[in-house]
Length: 285
Image 1 (cartoon, rainbow, N blue to C red):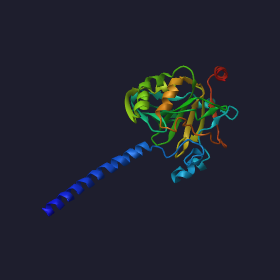
Image 2: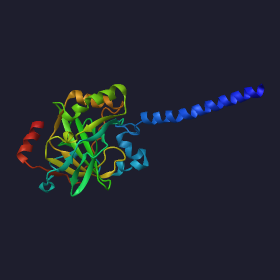
Image 3: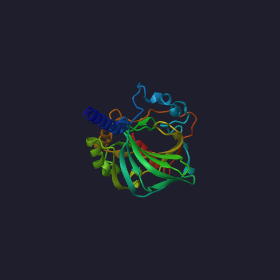
Image 4: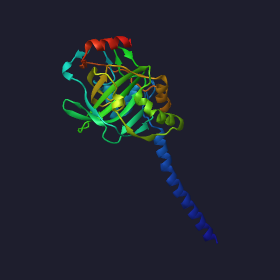
């Protein structure tokens, strides 16, 4: 009888051990999902933007790099460069998911969403995401929102198109994503498939743009990124901006990296119609 009782206790203990071993990895996985960000945008915080370069060894470029982004795109520094030519891009609708990455909201393309051609190299569109307020400034002015269209070449080189937004009429591209953004804010969902998404609608209007060499604006802040920032400012509604900021995790409602030093970098500017763009710039101020 005693040995039977001991056997029963041993089996019970073994079952409990197996149960705990199956629960721990799930809890750890959940913790890793919830503890999404090892960095923050809060100045003065241990993992704030001024400390990104010291927080992890592989992030050292955030502090030591000489070609960091974002920067102030000043017309006084920019060199007119008609040789840059019109942006050569060809976007197509592709299957996508909207993802809450904790520090931002991103649309990830799973199929071929088209590409951007720069100096004969094709950079394929991988994802788009938003920063509020804008990370880049134009002539010292910061805008309410900035969209980044992130492209990668076959050699894993990065090219990003940046679009700036001020408060005004609703943005057509964001309007189609509003139901998914609402669910992410209410239910804290991490990812949801949205079907076909046309990135051409995100690209918007405006042919004049700034071009410079910079970096990723989040750790590890890798340099060698070709930046193209569209001069024409689009509009986004107050409600749409609130949807984006409500959907991210607490502490990331403002997810814009501070301005970085320009140093000796060239800022080039392509403008097909000077008079028209000057009128647009004056209207923005």
